[in-house]
Image 1 (spheres, rainbow, N blue to C red):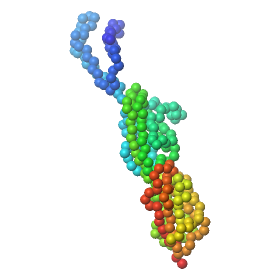
Image 2: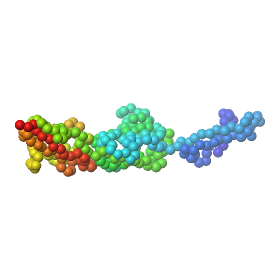
Image 3: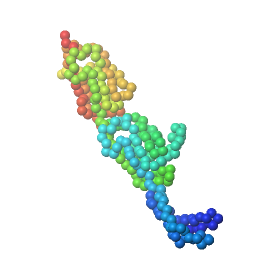
Image 4: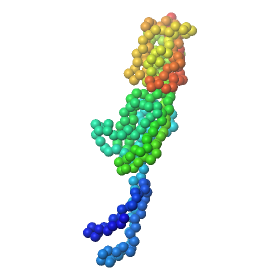
Length: 265
């Protein structure tokens, strides 16, 4: 529908149906256009404009298909245009959470700015587990652009393993009042660790009794025997099968047992 307004000296074009998204349109006024005084347009006029496009995901972290991701990783989604307005910290709770995770994970979402969304897991992710993250279709940006199709990617967390032990493997002249220390690469399920850890004299089956003291982050412990170790003796330490991370998932892999010798006579 084309209308002219003499008072405003304007021409108005109203489309009979919506423009297509993400499309460049060209508007042309031919030289035959004349004013009320009969004077024609000096030269044809061509104008171009672009309609609102589609909302898209520009980048994600961890990246799609990545392996060995730390269990405390922050999940990040970067969109190609502003999705939410700038708000105060107190108003963050009213903003949409654009992602879902499978397996499900409890956590807290936060918009770093208008187009970057962060998700921080409440507890450690499960070790050695593949997570699939989905941004659901229908999410709308501030300019009206819409995510037409769901965006989905996956990553796999690192399997739980032992990073360090004290005394070290094959250490000798270990003091009799020594405590055993173990450091993992992620927070562990304490019950599975304590029930499957053993310290015993080489060739014997009876475990040395003792007490566990855990690090604040849950990724390590100190085992203090109730009595001094025996002099000039070899001890075996390690874990039986079934030790898992705090969030569950794959069992402890790699290095799981070692031995050391106490001070000689």
